[in-house]
Image (cartoon, rainbow, N blue to C red; front, side):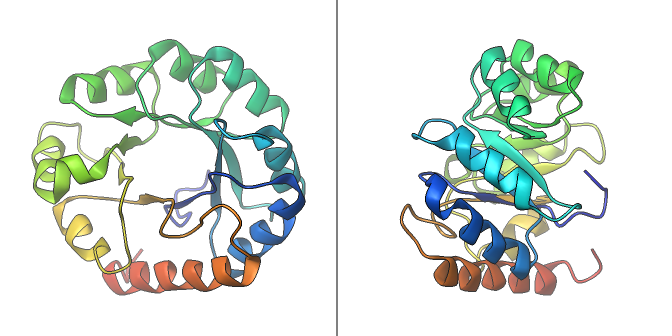
Length: 206
């Protein structure tokens, strides 16, 4: 993943193989370059295969809710190059790192944050972000290595991004506020543009 990639991850929970290409195209046209399909819904690997095949060259497709080494291997075989999880499992992170995948495991404590970084995490998914809030993120960031990417996930809206960024967020994972199962490409594209515009207003220099 390039260092200047827009750090907004589209979380497409419940995406179906027959809609993957159209929804992906809408996201890519809007400007998203990071797309995650959680594995805890049917057809996720088929969606990842489609998105990986049709994505722009500068996009990164990955799997979410990746809970085992087998998940990592399956997503990588499908063309996914990003590992996202709700938890911190050093063996899962290490395998993804070994395969050259961008790793963004979920953390809920400082201990998990440091364990994830030791295992090879590239970014830390603060999940569920609603539990922490911006004040919690700021406190966590104060003890982490400088420059550690912190991505809140859960309940993020275009209007709340500025408060999170002021507290130290460097990116976001965006799920239900961007995509709900069954949503059409036009709707998803419009929501994607709202989030990108909010990010540009909040972090104009990035």
